[in-house]
Image 1 (tube, helix red, strand yellow):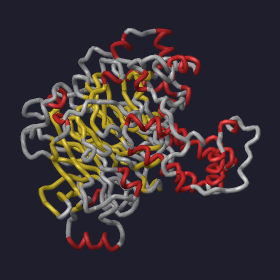
Image 2: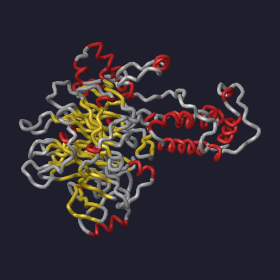
Image 3: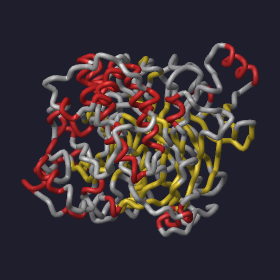
Image 4: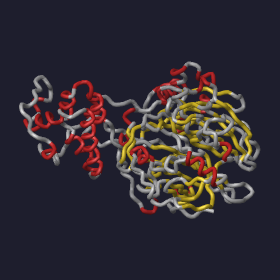
Length: 572
């Protein structure tokens, strides 16, 4: 669905649209079956094919690798009364008996191995091989009884990424690489301080996982400042917000603490400092909006807070601590902040704003009204993840999450559209929207999970996860897809459907898990730049990260150059 279409819907039609969990009614099983022999529509191309259909390819009974793994067991397992028994050969039952001897953990590992093999096959063969290799699983599930039943069913039916057939144009592959690290290199006020935190465990060079980038161009000229965040997921992170210096160390450019080391050094012991910063947002007035989760390893040392720093003076100008009703201690982890300025320059001073805070672990968005000095929580079925998309796979490595809202943008001013917050959960394929005038009205959110459900709109489906996203002033939304490993662009005036999702950059090596994304305007010429941070998060979860390789990257491209296919220049 596009925002122009939303503009024409009012009254009951709009209410019905918001109440639907998908933008169009889902077809019945009969309709799906009838549609099998018909060409898929453009909208259907993005829907995940959840029902295993008969393969048009004739597969032999003896599948590759199966004979080596399985041994004959007598007597064969009896499956009388099972609907699959009349379809199984003696070889099949022998294989099932062997699998039934496995523990649930061994079975799951076997299925994972099969899936990894499938992943390596060509895209055209993968879906057919999946059906062929897993055709005996219903009988296996029966043999494993209730303990392993639900787990095995999950692994047999979870969705695979929908392989979007984008053109592989080398012109779009390379973004400009600005910074690269093997691991994060921290600077300290003194060498003595560095040695002390290394000894007491507050600094472990292999612990920090950077996730976000933002860039500040001083309006009157001067050096560009690049800020990155390294949240305290656990111990060993000396500070969670810093700026990149010109000092070069063995594994990359050195980072220094921001606003100063003193803001971070107590590790949650001083709630007037910063405990754990996940993401930041720099507004048009040169103010940095900082989201501090207040927790380390889900231990809530301090209340989550919004801290605003004036970048020209590096001074604190605003602080807001979230009230207890807006978060869940030991569960909440606030990770994304977006400040929607109501009085932008040149006429305004960025003093009035609505700030949106994403809390994916407790599945909610918190709205903060700066002028009204109050906040409220938005949580319902639209802010929840989809368990089918809880397995995230990047470059052949998978990890499990069940995160709610992560990425948020607002529709730009000046497009003639009703403004919305566009958002998605990390573990979901849906792109969603909610009108800002509804979101900003605290009285609309007093009914808990049932509040304003009719106002939510499902724009469309991706068939795969994407993490961070950003939107240009002309209404192009960019997002880093997990598969294909690239940057996808979408004009929000068009339907969120496959023909309108354009592959703008593709690099399976340098774009692995784009966790941070910002669009920044250069004061010198007014042009927009897309900045991204990629961190190979799948390797962190899998324990396969190699600190002899480049793991973390900051890259950029002019928005116009990317959209028009000119490649990415060096910028200003």
